[in-house]
Image (cartoon, rainbow, N blue to C red; front, side):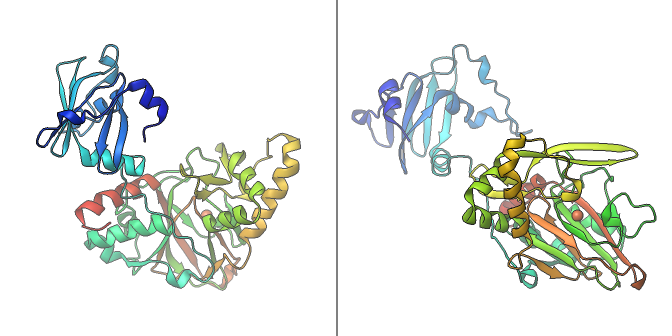
Length: 392
Ligand SMILES: [Fe+2]
């Protein structure tokens, strides 16, 4: 939206006298143009307009092949006009005419950024949601783009989905993960197996309870979307515990805004050390997106290092942190259920906090095979399928 300073500085205005037929001549400003659009008249900077020229994008690679820095003195229009559904600009600084669809400009103004079919608002969930987790059969995801779209959408909207009737093989998990993207490696390689080990390097590989956590906060880029394919589960106990961390964080914001701000503004350290590795990274307990909405959490007390914030800040930070840990354990958020063999729970590792109750090691067998793909690959899949599958 044009502000007064821009209006005075650039003195760009619509020349209403020169409207002829379907063509409207615009008076070029010093550094940009006022463009009448269906949503109103809006100011656009010349650099932005020049970069927005569709001819800047190579049709084969679909990458930008124009270097704005090569326009000596910066782009400036010699003339501009609206012609039908396009804005046409002739540039004083080069032999070139740009033709920009007005619909593209208007969509950008309305959303404040390039419209994104994967920008789907999160749907917060609470206790007793397990029966309502979006469910998909593996065969349906693999055979239908529409179902695959719904699967990717669920992981953006709800941050969790259950895939049923999974084939009992190693390849089955790979096939499912590849419906969304490429498997991304971590300390443990491309895949990990959660089962009892004689010399465990992780609490997950014991029969003990696993406190609420998000995975691998000690890595610079903690894994995005996690898959846990339940291959076998005949033990007594070992119930899964899942909650929506975004819902819990929003509750903290509502009930104690100062505590929320502390957890959303300061990074704390995490580690993962053993004989052959020593990972360390700082993370924010509450992660916000560009709109200030809670997009995720990082929680893992068993991988949390000595907090290196100023000690005087800890006088407030630690009580805020403990308050949030208590909220995470409240019944109103926690879902407790048994993962059944043949199912795979898929969830946003930055949003969904998970844990496990202890189980009786000698009572049977429990084997989960896991891997990760990036959050970005899920959004990419969602965008592509929103076009090709006619969804979204
Ligand atoms: Fe985990």
